[in-house]
Length: 464
Image 1 (cartoon, rainbow, N blue to C red):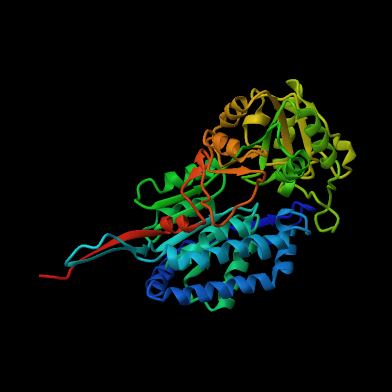
Image 2: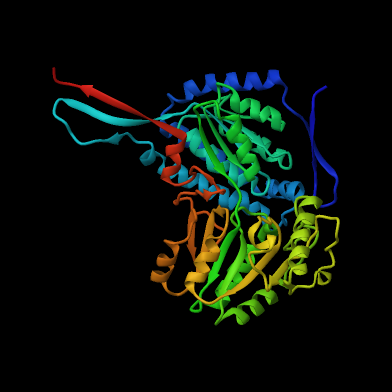
């Protein structure tokens, strides 16, 4: 009997999607079809690839309201925000990668040498398996899908069981754009079958976004094969507010960076360090703005904070909060002021904790929920030490009016991206990468193409 995935909406605990998982025969057919399609796609002019991918973006943008509402039902982000994932961030990233493709994929010239023609060509890898998560299901997937196709690869997409319809909408968008059959395919897979696919000789690269544990499983599955891996994993991203910061701007940015998407963002802010000279004023402003959030049914237009993805995830965060309070932390937001907050459900009020330190799980362990710990620091050096006291290194941010200081401090912080006066945003012109347990590899920017191609050297002797 075929296995079935069931997607349970965090809004009301109802089953909203049921799909059969792919059989071994279907997986084998998809791999074979992708391999054959890629051989032909590789020969297509880059301009044609760009034209078809642009048509895909346009098709998705035209349906952003419909896709956004569907996304809200699958994973719980408020309806007022979800259409922008498709028509804003996803489209921006895709269009940037289209715009730089010609330069990024152009032959690399080397120094002239009499009697020889020499250059390096960027060859596609073959078939790319993209394993995407539920929290930003369009944004995370597009990071690999678009440059992989533009570089001449075929793509297989395995999406989270929480957001399977996203994968199907990708397939519909590419079909509407006229992409040749077999180049982009969707497979609903179990964990075991995903690992089996990774081990298959038809797969030439795996782009995975998810947990550290998931990344280890992907790496282990690929251990006996010489293929590339892109691993975008967890984060415990810090922020530092210096004494010279614009506090109003810092408060506004950091509340949003902490609680947008119910804190379920790998690059969301999870811990804040504030210089003692502005600590009290910052905390007061942060708490006041946090209390303006409305927790509730994300389909309602005035709701700004929806449920977490599942009750178990919310209970994990509640456990972190309880442990911190037991160890001496103080919670400055009463969850009773958020009527929708109910233990045992995915609905969790935002929490602001002070009197915290790094002996507490909430300051060192990824929360992935609407909770933030705020610590007072006496100096830049103290802030750097605490920011680096983590197994993660995805992004880090500073609020200051001194760019030179931001650069100096940023050079000392162990992170993939360093922000000044902003956070929780991926600029497609910049490399998206992490250090330590936040993963390895790179997506976006011109550099992102390097991981989806291989160099092939041409050494032609023209004079004999």
